[in-house]
Length: 231
Image (cartoon, rainbow, N blue to C red):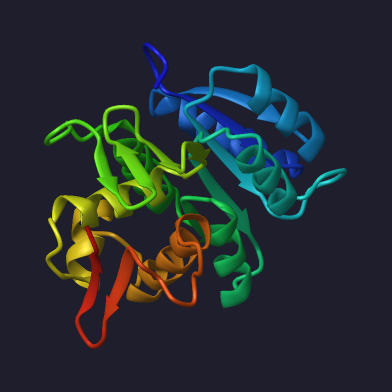
């Protein structure tokens, strides 16, 4: 998180939406930078000290999905909220699996958007203190202080939300956590996230952490209950 007011990058090609977001976000105390296409947005994200990106899916030059995919492939973990007029479940799943922290369907209310921004920034800001330094499990090494995970020494890029979910399970010391417990712990009270979202994030974590995601060794499903981390 940058010093002072949180800095938000808005990547949106609709000028009326961009202007409205810029005015209202600044009124809420945020610093706002605007990009009108995906290529400009990607360059701004690479160059600036950005705390949060709000990005539309349908953009000129580079769409929102590709922008997020590129940032994550480069190891950039700035939180992302995606906006789209398309409310199809698969679009939401794709956005979350690519590494976005949240996905909002247009039209949306400002109160809802502000609440989600605060929730995402809060999750990104919280760095849980280490219990006993590095946590080692098989080929995995988890550093809660740096919020990093390595497998066989190689750094595995995780989004802020992915790390929060992983650390939530690691901290439970092998105990089972229900989906509702994970939702409350990671997203906080008053969230608008479903249990299906937790499942999707676990699938994404397995694809990154497990040698064989179909036969997980660390992130285990306890059928009918929830998930646990196998230490």
